[in-house]
Length: 359
Image 1 (cartoon, rainbow, N blue to C red):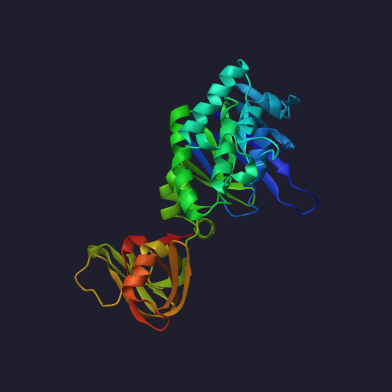
Image 2: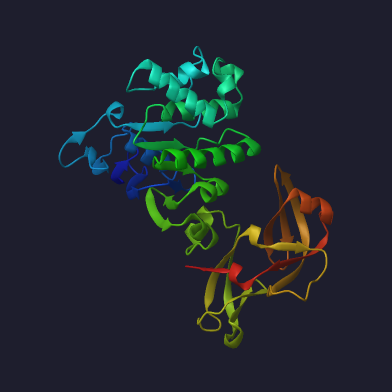
């Protein structure tokens, strides 16, 4: 198990301070948060690239760093595999030579067999003799992953490894990384701010904001049900509204909330009528219809008008005014079938449980 207590000031004066205690066991532990939150600095401290001001870092009983005891183990002796954002492959070496560069232990023959096995698992055997400039972005990242794994590390550290590839390649690589982790059994500490990667890969998710751990748990729970306004913003809850309690229907398990003149229904709570409240609704939890649907279990069916449409890759993002502006995400297929245009009248549909009360 990785156990890391890290305190590090990043610069002088009012510069951010990393002050965290994180643990990672089996599976993939995701460090999730916005850019500048301190995720990469935490990873670099575990690797030995960044030296904390204070703290203690251990892996399965081996002490990497202990400020009280004056212990600092250099990166080359920590037995960690590190995959960077931008591959960092040697341009003059072939893909296989790049992967062999990091291999250690045993003889050259066994190292070569290990690399060839890794290339086979990742489906890049045909790239072995190619130079990095002859590889696609996805192939380069697979080679970088193989190079880190070839060292037979005790833990893998991955710093947003898929940020530079397209969405289709990212989807395939996400599945490959999950499969490699399952096969090797090596714990992965994975930095990302991509929701899909976090949900597909993470067994545990640690939410990092401003150098602090703000929440830890299952990725689905943290992303789908944030408990605070700050957490909601970090995990990408697009709709955050400030309103007041309008009424209760305890027998039906419902509470009415007025958000700027738009009344929505949430799961029942015991707040007093008129009390201020903040709620969050994820854009993916909202359905779009061209007709008012009455025979549905969803309690919220709101009439609105599309103000703007943004189409990019595998997602279409809408802003729909229903008295307040809702951000909604649909697939390109739904966009095409519904024939969505700016100015269209639509109905937004979402369940009461999709409305999360935030503190």
